[in-house]
Length: 336
Image (tube, rainbow, N blue to C red; front, side, top):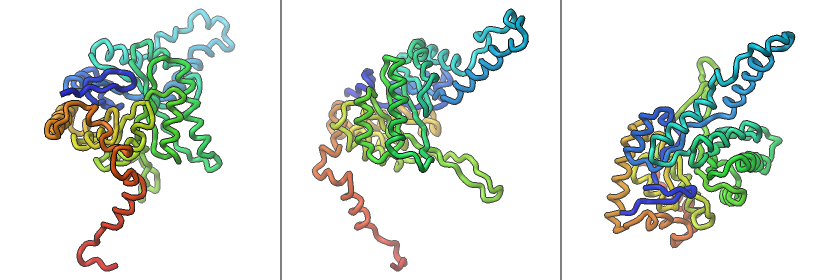
C-alpha cells in the first residue's frame, strides 16, 4: 500500500506529521515519534518576543557597559559566552537533522515584520528542511480593518521569504472574512503551504479572585470539522499544500481530512495524551480502512469528498446548516 505524499515539496512516507509540541525539545522523544511512524516533524516554536528580548538584553549588558568607562572595552565578555534561546534552537535543529531520517520543519511564532526574521537564515543554515510561520495575532484594535490584518500576514511572509529559500508553511487561524481568497493570496506571495487551523487559546475568568487566568482545553475530534470544511473547499482550487491541524485524534479523524483533500494531517494533543506510539495506531487504522475500501494509495483517498467531488457542493456551505437544523429533534418531555 502506497502511503507516500508530497508536502511543501518534500517527499514523505505517509501523511502523518506531528505539529509543534514539547516533544521536539527532546531528542529521545523525537526519535520515538519517528520510530512510531512520523513522516516529518514540526519543531516547537521560536517566539519573536524571546528573540527580541534576548537581543535587547545582549545590547544592554554587553555593549553599553563601557558608558562612562572607556577602559571597559578591553574586558567586556564576548556574546558567544552567553548562549541564548536562539542558539539553543539552532543547536536543536542541527541535532535533529543529524540524528533523524525524516524532514525537520522549524517554527517561528510572531506577529510583526522586522529584524527578528533575519534569524530564519541561520535556521535554514542549521539544516531545517522547511519553516512554519505561526502568526498568532489577535486583532483587538477596533480601528484596524480586516485588510490591515491580512496585510500584516503578507508583510511578515514577504520579509521571511526574502531571508530563506526553503519552503514556508503558514499556520492560519479561521478568523478571516474570506479564508479561500486569503489562502490563494498567500500562495501568490510565495507560501508553499498552509496549516488550517491555528487554535487561539482563550483567557478565562476566575470569579473568586476576580482575575484573568490562563486556560488550556485539549482539542477534541469535532474541532477538526472546521478544517475539514475549508480544506474540502480549497482542494483543487489552490496548488499549495493543505495541512489539517486541530482535533485529529483517531484514524477516522485523519481519514476524514484526507478525503476532504488534506495533504498531511498534524497531530498534537492526541500524542501528548497517549504518547508518540499512538501514531502507530492511527497509521494502522488508515491502512486497514484503505484495504477495506480497496484503495491502494493515499492519492486515491485525497480529495475524494472535496467540494469539487461531491454531488451537492452546497453541502459544504449553507445546505448542511439548514439540514442540521431541520433534522434536530428535542428530547422527550421538552416542550417548545
